[in-house]
Image (tube, rainbow, N blue to C red; front, side, top):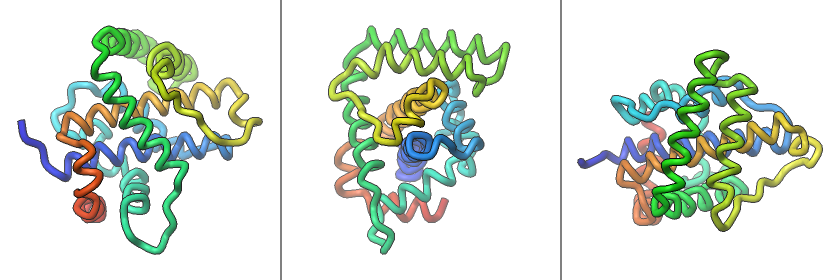
Length: 203
């Protein structure tokens, strides 16, 4: 099945939004709760009718689209190398994950377990976030190289913040999987950057 550049742009923007929130939590202890809800909801939205529907529509990844334009564009605003490091690591680890059917099954079962919790609480309830964070620790965090999150130790040592960071990294991985399903790969990042920046601007 063929996919469009717009779909790849949407998926990559989802990863940019999740890693942007990781950075916010790690450095400030706060984040945009609406963007957070979109990222967490995307983990549970595994059979959407469209790529944009993963994020509740294009509006849901407005922040991610802005980050994508900044990071991949040639404008005057400087690129954030911390975000770049997270994105490169996530896309690399996604390729490793794709070769490990046992871990993929473990993640699928873990998401279903968290979905059951979300039905009793909400998708962003602390219990659900803790469950998703534990799933990340038990699976993706065991792959190499591990993602090392930079930030203020005072914020990162807070258990709730640590859980949010890990859940957001799981959301970033979900977007990376979607990116590959939409035909994304190294070639698009190397040669299709300008087109994705234009797509992000249009969206």
